[in-house]
Length: 120
Image (cartoon, rainbow, N blue to C red; front, side, top):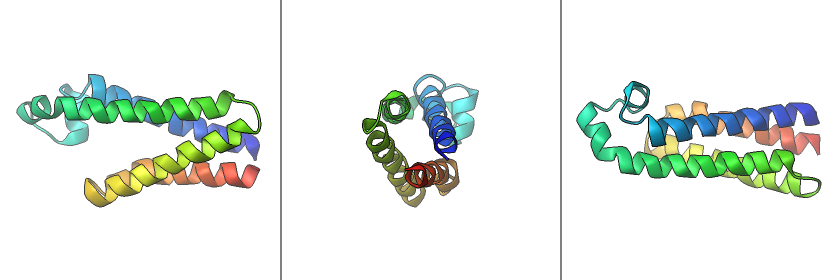
């Protein structure tokens, strides 16, 4: 079960690293505009906000990687904390921005969190 928990945690970290790239570097390009649904003018106007969001997603990814490489007992606590942050951010995003975030962010985070808790 520990291997499954680590794989799921790694996938969530990779997802957030990908979101960082989309929001910080590709927001005004086709992939970022497809994600947001914004036209070029709106993408340009919101780019600083998206970059800030991307940075926070990067912090989530970094924390999850830390949890994967840290030794016991730190690893468990770090993974639980950062996966909980992912789930909370996903729930908030789904409630306030776009319901797709529930499936794209909160669900993977919740599955990884459940696996980490069960593996203990």
